[in-house]
Amino acid sequence: MTPDQLLAYLGPAFLYAGAATLAAFTGLRLAGLRIDARHALTLFLALFFLALTQFPLPDRATLDCSAGGAEAILRPFATLDHIARQWRWWRNEPEIGLAAWAGNKVIQAAVMNFALCAAIGAAFARHAGRVWGALLLAVALSGGAELAQLTGLFGLYPCAFRHFEVDDLILNIGGLMAGFALMRRWRRA
Image (tube, rainbow, N blue to C red; front, side, top):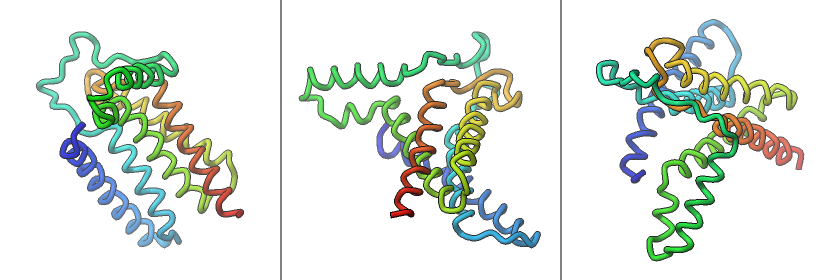
């Protein structure tokens, strides 16, 4: 993915998440609930994650559901196999450059999933009580995003238009828990 493609992908998700966060933050404040910027940051990051997992939405007229839609990828750690293959390829042909390896969509998605979920976990740690709350958030957030992908956005589309991936569940939950644990440890130090 080129920098322009990455910006075109991240930009709208950032705007959707920002608008939804502002609306929710304003609505909650008007309802008399006491929330602060830390809550807004956690909400923004979670909504940004959800927007990235669902958008861009496909055009219904061109969505091909004849084969049942996007297939679920149920083999755990398939992403690691892909990364290892890409690493071996890059090591055998170094003249191609590290940028070609790092520009691989699967590698970018894995890094982005883990990093964004780690940021969510770190933000959540600032106002969460126990690790179980973080685990519940991780499972609900990642599970909800992947379930939406598996069901064609909960039936709004006639078939899945994105891949449900077990590795995404692993990376997302692992990233959120890692960010939560690191922030809790840092705050104790």
